[in-house]
Structure formats: C-alpha cells, structure tokens
Image (cartoon, rainbow, N blue to C red; front, top):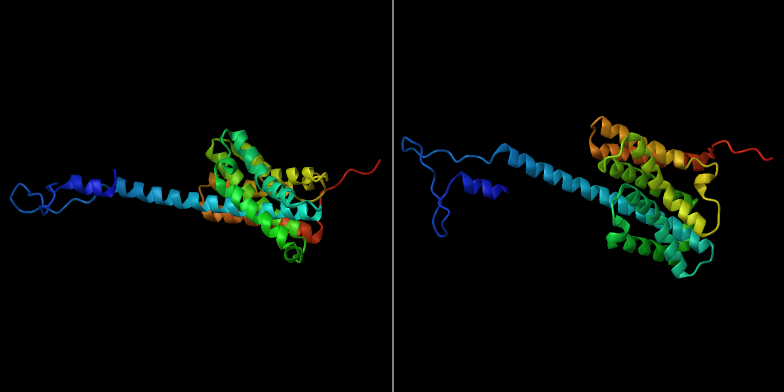
Length: 255
C-alpha cells in the first residue's frame, strides 16, 4: 500500500471537487489526522535502499565488464586479430565468468545475455581498444591492470550473487573466485596461450580473498557498500602488488 493510499484511508470525503474534511471526534472537536502506519514508511525506506543497492551492484558489474573487455580486446590486438575477432575476444573475456556463475546458480537466462547493456559495454571497450590501442599500450601492463580491476569487481559481484541465491560461505567464495577468473581463462584459451590463473601469478588467490571479505562482511551484517569496497580493494591490491613486485606461488620443478 502506498503513502497516498494510507492517507486516504485515514480520513476524507473521497469525492472529487470537495475539500476533504477532518474526521470528528466523539465530543465534536476535530481530531488530528493520523499519520501513515510506521510499517509503510519503513517499507518505502527499505524499498528505496534496496533499489539503490541494486543500482550500485549493476554499476559495479558493468564497470568490471568494461575492464575485462579492454583486457580481452588488448590481447586480441596484440595477436593481430581483425575487428570482429577483437570484439569476440572482448565479449568473451568480459562475460564468460558471469555467464558461468549464473548458470551454476540457476539464474537463467544469464544476465550478460538477457541485458543488452553488457554486450554494448563490451563492444564499446573493444572498439575503443581497436582504434586507440597505442594510447592504452602506454599504460604499464595494460592487460594485467584492467584484468586486475575486472577480477576484483567480478569477485565481489559473484560472491554476493551466490549468497543471494542461498549458497553457503564456502560455495559463495568458490563462485566469487570463479566469476573473477572465468573471463581470463576463456580469453587466454581463445588465443592459445596458458591461462594466467594456471601460472605462478597470484590470480585466483586474490579473487578468493576478495570473495572471503564479502562473505565475512555479510555474516557480520556490516553495511553493504563498505564491504564491497573493502573486498575489491583487497583483491585488486593483492593482484597489483603481485604484478609490481613479482609475487608468485611455487611452481613445479622441471623434471
């Protein structure tokens, strides 16, 4: 029931063209109009807050899509693909993790296929990279930098969505990690190179730690936005430091 409905039910003539009159008390004195029930106001507040949070989550998801799409398009340009190949690689890198996540939790059709914004953002990133590759290449390690940003944002969204669909803490962490690393794996496989996640770089570990921050924050009932910021910061920070200082996991010794 809306706010106006509550007001109408609290008193008034209900006729068009007439001035609403105050309800009379038993002694004939006009009574004070009643306020809407507290539950209605709280419901409106909760609805607005949920809408704002959903908007934030969608925005983060699209930013992560753009970052991963640039990393995929950059790899495509480096491998001398034509513009169609670059766009395919940018879309695959940007959406593979999210599509896998949605299929595993039964959220069908996957949002990346149902919402045209994801395709548009991926294509925009691919076109920008194709025609402005020299500007992007001036950044230090552009593929790794944008890949780290996408990894962090997708780990946050993946773990949140897993919890929202009823997965436990362990499942949410694993799905958050998968959301982050899925796009990079598909991107590398399409250009026939060993995926970064299978090399010594701290890649999946960073995504997993970011997802853990989300799960712990939700369990402690902390505010959603600070939890998401902290999770993305931990994931991106660890990945960036690993790139900058060459941190890596032990590798198998040669035979």
